[in-house]
Amino acid sequence: MGVGGGYAAAAAGEGGGRSTLALVPTMGALHEGHRALIRLARERADHVAVSIFVNPLQFGPQEDYSRYPRTFGTDLAVCAAEGAGLVFAPAVEEMYLPDRQVGVSSGQMGTIVEGAFRPGHFDGMLTVVLKLFNLVQPDIAVFGQKDAQQLAMIRRMVADLNLPVAVVGAPTVREPDGLALSSRNRYLSVADRVTALALSTALREGARHTRPKDILHAAHAVLDQAAQADPPLALDYLSLVDPATFTAVADDHRGEAVLAVAARVGTTRLIDNVVLTLPA
Ligand code: PAF
Image (cartoon, rainbow, N blue to C red):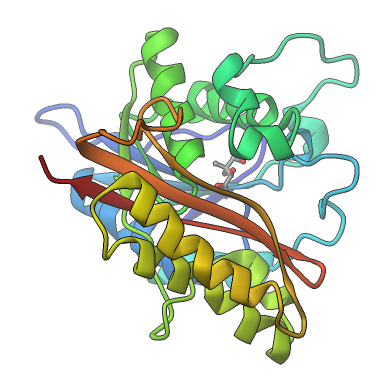
């Protein structure tokens, strides 16, 4: 496995047709969810590159950039064990010029739902993803469905900017009790974790229904109860949205919808979602 900062080169195939390269962009602190992304990437391409870069541009001033877990040694072992051929782990100074001027705008879509609570987040995220695409030049890129709006925004950027990369979404990996895996779960105390379970429980309760109003009502009931717990859950949003645009669906909506939730427990902010198919 090669490890590089600065530049990454795809391993070229020996003779025959052109070999394909998949990129798995990450911010490190790799867990079972990332392992699943790397495994999916291996199924879809001949070679897999993993990028590890905690991107300062996508964190707000009050967010957890400085305390974000950095576990580079273990991350390298995970990448090697899962068969990644290359790890690209640039330093911040290698990625951004000190007088950087130009970046990607996530447009109006970057200001709604998750974007309403994290101003500038999607601009910073798309900027680094575009830079990673340019540096690594993958044929495909794999992202987790856990960050559903991130995935939708990346698909939108690929369409709007004609990027020659096929975007693949991978299902969310969960703990046996339902908690979605996240690098931020390690911030949770034992009591926090009990309260945090309300996110996935709310989504599961919502998913038992088929009408938007009933879905939201059932999920809110779980979250309202968790708001009374110790520690309490502080809800940022619960939204039922179109998977491509992230605009709220109407009550007569049919077909796919994403039930997305974000909440704070103690000092940790968590997000989760489930994709539903609403029957005619
Ligand atoms: O999902 C993440 O870990 C990050 O947002 C990403 C896509 C690697 C960009 O920094």
